[in-house]
Length: 359
Image (cartoon, rainbow, N blue to C red; front, side, top):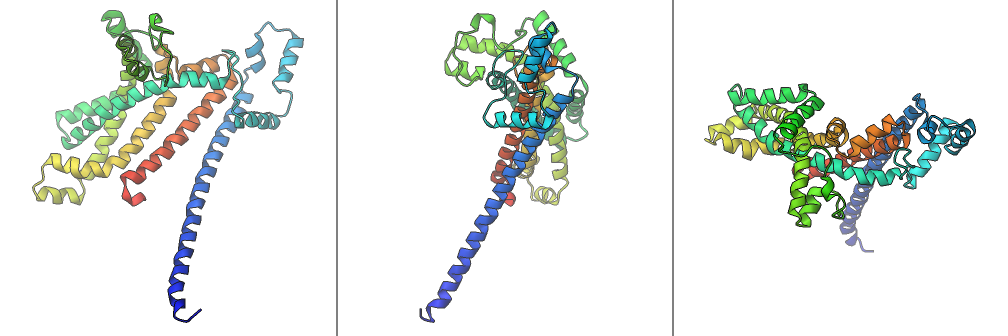
């Protein structure tokens, strides 16, 4: 090789080394994220399993009933592996989970995985209605309240937020049923669908609003809306209370920044300042709030589902706890933890889309 060719090759070698180190760094971050997810779910599963074994509830009686004879009790006890050490029971259960086997529900007699696939779309649909309501009302309300700080609209927004965090949702649900169902007959009471429509349509996505709209069955669509309106809007009200309060706080913080003073000095209107500059700077924070709200609704709609007889994840988990059905409890908890991890991952990716500083 000639001496003239060596200088040109050196920068190429350096660039290749930099690309290699960058790829290794990316792979390291991905591996770290995967390890973190696995450890989080494993810890959640271990905690739930241990608590299930420490509770005074007897899983054998949940299957056989209280009048079982001793021979049958001992046989079921051994079949469930309860005669083995707890660590061995956990490893056996973990192996089944890794194969996609969450066990059989003693309450329904079906696979827990099948039950979860059946009840989860109901909770997801309810949560989506609530979070969309919260965003469409809560974000504008919080912005308007911050811009008009100390004025009547600000006081109204703060009262809405305070009531949303103070009034028990089960009481509000009962009062709403009394008024809008029993007195005014504006909505239907319980379930996702009237008995008349049960079995008339094969679900595609499991989201009845979407399925009935795609099938253009507008009579059934109206029936679905009549059932979901009250629980969805009540959960939406709690979302509005939280999102509007946080949005107000974010906007007030931005309105005190120097760039807002400079924009006002340039003659920009309040509307232009808020929607061109302030909103752009708070959208990442709002994304976090909306993600937390959605995760909380997926996990915390238990009381609303109980009051309105909504056949979702919350009611399924409550029934499992009542009947000492630990396969149901552990399966529901694992699904909830997986949902939170998934929402966090999606939120992280959206951060990079919305904010160039995180890329």
